[in-house]
Amino acid sequence: MLSPSANPPVILTFAALDPSGSTGIQADIETCASIGAHCAPLVTSLCTSGETAERESIPVNTEILIEQARSILNEMDVRAIKLGFLGSIESMEAVHSLLQDCGNLPVVAHPSLCLWQDPWRDSFGDAFAELILPLVDVGLFTLYEAQILAREGDSLEARAREILSTQCENLLITGTGEQQPEFRNSLFQQRGEVRHFRWQQESAASQGASSTLAMSIAAYLAHGFSILQAVEEAQNFTWQATRASRHIGFGRSTLHRFFWADPNIDSAAKPSNKSSH
Image (cartoon, rainbow, N blue to C red; front, side):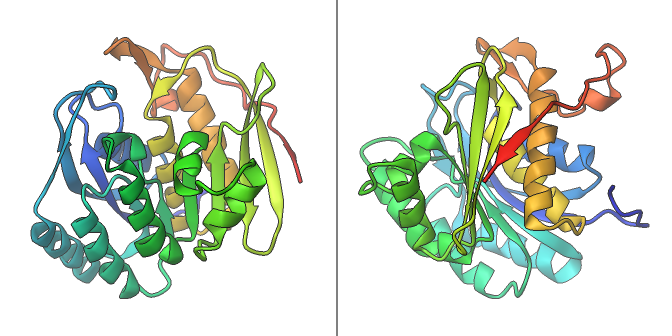
C-alpha cells in the first residue's frame, strides 16, 4: 500500500513532448498522478508528430533545461528522478553534472532510443552509457535498445553484463521472452541476481508502455518501495493500463493510465504474474 501523506512525493522527470499525448512527458504526468505522486515535468525536446516512424525530435535549449531542473530541486521536496529521452548529447552532459549533485535520490532511466535517428543512434547510445548509466538505480530498455547499447553481446545475458559494467545498479529489459501467449521482462542486478517476470501477452502493441513502466517504477520508489517491490508493482500497473488501452489515433492503441477510475471499464483482475530466478 502507498503511505498516506499530506503531500504527494515529487518526481522530477525529463522527457520529450509527444503531441499525441501517448508517450513522453504526458505519459509521465498521467502515471504520476494515477499512482499518487506529483510530476515536475521538464521537456527535453519537441516531437514533430505522434508517429514514431516519421517524427523528428528538436532538442530544447540545454541551459534553460538545467535552470528549470535546479529550481525544482531547490524549491520542491523531490523524492525521485525519472529520465526519458534527453534530446541531445549536450543535454546528457548537463544532466550528468546535475545528477552528481543529487545525493541519494533514486534515478530511473529509459533512453527512448527510437527518437534518435540514424546514423547518430549508436553515438547517442554510447553517450548515454558513458554519462548517464553509471548514475542510475534502475535502467529500463526494450530488447532492441539493449542490443544498441551492448553491441558486443551475443545473448541476453551477455548484453546485460555489458550494460551492467557501466555500474548501473539494476537493469530491466522488456520483451525478452519468445513464447506466446506470455510476455517476459527480465531484471538483472549488480550482485548477479536475475529474475524473470512473465505476463499475459496483450494482442497489440500500445503507445507509451515503456514511458509508463519507467515512471511507475520511479513513483513507487518515491513512495518508499524497495527496488524489487517497485519493479513488480510498476509492471502490474503498466499491464493494467495496457489492458485498458484505447484507440485514439495514429493507428495504435494508447495506454489508459486512469483505468481504475473509468466507470466504463470492468474492474481489472490482477494478472497472474509468474516470476522466476
